[in-house]
Amino acid sequence: MLSGLSSRIAAAVAGARAITPRRAAPRPLLFAALVALSACSTNNVLNLRPDVDVGTTAALPRGGMQDLVPDDPYLQKADTARLQEPAAQPLYGEQPPVAADDAADAGEPTDVTAAADAGETAGDAAADEPISLAGQPAAKVPPAVSQPVRPQDDAPVIMAGYPRMDQPQISGPAPMPADELAYRRELRGLGVVWRETAPIYDSASCHIAHPIKVSGLPDGIQLTPPAVLNAEMAVTFAKWTKNELNPAARRRYWSRVKSIHQLSSYSCRRINGSHSMSEHATGNAIDVGRIELTTGRDIDVEKPGLFAFRTRGFLDTVRADGCEYFTTVLGPGYNYDHRNHFHFDIMPRRGGRHACH
Image 1: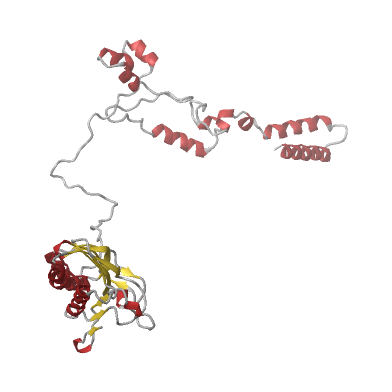
Image 2: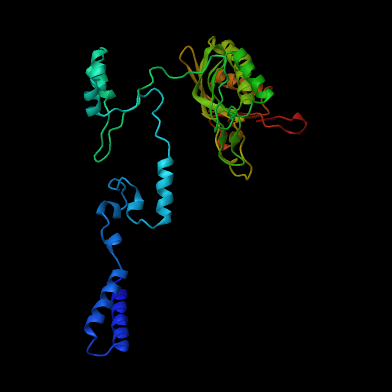
């Protein structure tokens, strides 16, 4: 603006010098300068109030924004729209605010006084007091709703924004085959003590899908330590113990069998000196090393002495009777590896052949 003013003054002076003589220049020059100054009035801009200049409307003149720049048509339109705005309506259930001075002049009690006259506590009265912020008029807090609005009992409840979710499908272990269930029913009928164990899968050749651990046999005979077998082998061994082993002990020693000491049940290994897997690798075999009677006598399966006729006869009966239940029976005299135990398994063979040695 100052640069424009200086340019106007310079133009006025140049014009005066061009049209008047040098002697008469001072007075017309002064007149032209005054005319230029009057053409650029800065009163409307330099006299702006600070609070209006930073964007607030608290200090605007009562006449509106048009008083700042009278000749601005946009400000005239804004003042007209402001005057046509309706007055703010109070909230539902709220009385229009009354200034404290006006209430005192009118003889009306304030909100706190009215609450005290109505028997309300000080805390309730304080809750109804207007909240005043710095630089802002006091605002009244709307009264709290005493009872929440509840839907009727027969009204349907609709949950918006939430997808419908079906019941989760819990996948459990695969059902046990029918033959496994049949073997377990037979074990319970024989009085065998056993429990389920976790499936075994040590390799493609060493595995039992539904193994059990047997600790007790029919007639109260203990199996020490408990043997891990498949259910079919456990049923076969229990039948042999009940029908052959215990009756043979009664005939030979007038005593019952107290416990059977086994040397191996499930074991992931090959047949010694062969590339074939042993039947122990599938829980299909058990090795019996010693038989204990209720009289306290222990009978080792290892080949008895020359004059142990009763023991030799008992072991021969055990071997012969076992061939009627198991497909393989190996014991002392077969090879060095079976010198001290009986090996029983139910490996299937063609034609139902048995190997008893």
